[in-house]
Amino acid sequence: MLEGSVQEEMAHMRSGRIVPTPMLPWLPVATALAYPWVLRLFHAAIASATYGVAPALCLAAAFALPLSCILIAWRYSSGASDACLLRVRRTAFAALAAPPLFVLVGVLSGLLHSPIKDVWVWSLLWLVVGITATITRAEPKREPSSGTIGRTRVLHGISASIILLFIGFHLFNHLTGLLGPDVHARVMAFGRVAYRSHAIEPVLVALLLFQIASGARLAWRWSVGPLDFARTVQIGSGAYLAAFILTHLNSAIVSARWVHGIKTDWAWAAGAPDGLLIDAWNTRLVPHYALGVFFVITHLFCGLRIVMLAHGVRTSTADRVWKIGLLCAGTVSLLITAALCGLRI
Image (cartoon, rainbow, N blue to C red; front, side):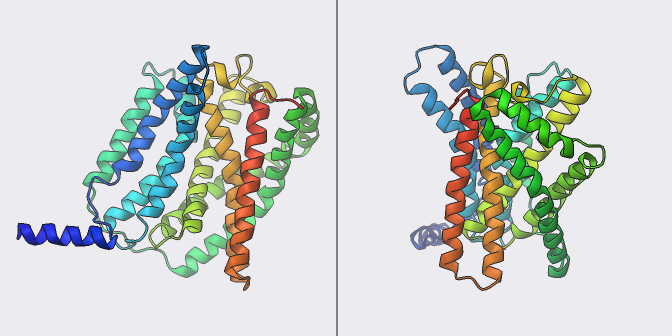
């Protein structure tokens, strides 16, 4: 019997098939556990003032860890009906959101005056996630009907169309940071007349919270089925944005405005006076912001790709538009992150 099991496993390996094991969810969990320590290495390299390639390598690793979770989710997307691989995919999507979730843990630790450092809270939480994903044996539950999911998808899209007005202005406003904080402040003051008004702001917050809830429902449903790479990116970017929106609302509205009475201006976003690169806490904001900008544009183009395919556009054309969208997302993300780190033109 043992010989037969070995031969069967070798046959799976030769055929490229995945042999599910309970330890597979620890792959994405390991990336989340390592994430804050890589950020610490980045700060140590910057603080040493020796520079060279060490800071660049550490920062690249801080981006690579969460992004690798997209590849993990895609790699283990073939066994759609297998409960183990489903846990791997869902854990990977959660670990992809490590940058905003780590910011959230840090802000909440400060608000609660926790005596335990946020990095240890973070580690404990992800160890619990890993253990839970390992010992869970339940098969996937029966999912909602396609009609229910279809209505959720439509409402999610309508809500996103409204929020897009705010997102478009917000990204443009941050791009003006390349011209300096004064230009950014003037543009922001113009926009806040609308989105900070007593009539619009509560509606905008409600729509953002609805996006989180409806997006989580869609991601949970779609993660069950087989995923191509574009669908994996769509679900992953949605998971990241859900964590990013929740974190940003907590940081800007609850922590900054309500608790500490801080103006959420350019100085606040850029981590003044020390900036994003020098302060040990603020370094976590670099991948948090950069991937947030990248994924919000990426998610929009993922949705556009689905709409194009549904209206009979050729797959090659839809994929080409999607890839152009990814390039635009990377460019805008790089420019805004550079502005937040001090670049001026």
